[in-house]
Image (cartoon, rainbow, N blue to C red):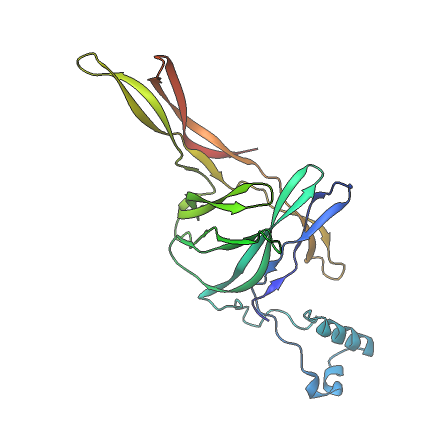
Length: 283
């Protein structure tokens, strides 16, 4: 019962009827919970630790529902459920599409959890996602993910920097799914290469016109600048426990610096292309 999926509801908006939509996206519990006492020890020994029969029956009901009792908390040493060399991570996710009032929304839902070995360097690891779950078009794709510690670099994390794509058949059209092929240590908001090709007209030493292919890395800004999620509903018995979350709006990762590339196009006209050189978080 240490590393397993538990419910984690988030509010994603209103459906086309105007009703609020809350989705259980799940989360992987990262710490063990001590097991409640076995009923094999007898009712008397169990009851003796409770102040009243009402408390005993309430605790018994919680155990039957699979929830930890008030006495069962983190293990005394506070050790992670998977040990110091592993973490509790999802084994796979599925992507559900929910029709909301303001359009179609994709929601990633954790299906199950397992203990995954920690790595001390930044690398790409498998990450399975299921699309069109329980339909004739159900497809599982390894979209990849980045794992690894940031090491001694404060403010840096292991993030995707190289991408590819996969095709998925749907009832209406073929859908393109972006996959991760490479990872690197970067700051929260960072620049990745993005190459464009243009035809360029040049003149050689003899004055003859030549047409060449010009490659320009215009770049793209990626990364997270979110300000965190807000708790909409807390447990009546434990104010530290959040039952329903709202996703934080945060700020955008936008270009900070740029450079210009000027050349003659096929029609002899001057063309200028701007390329991103750096990125930052901006409200």
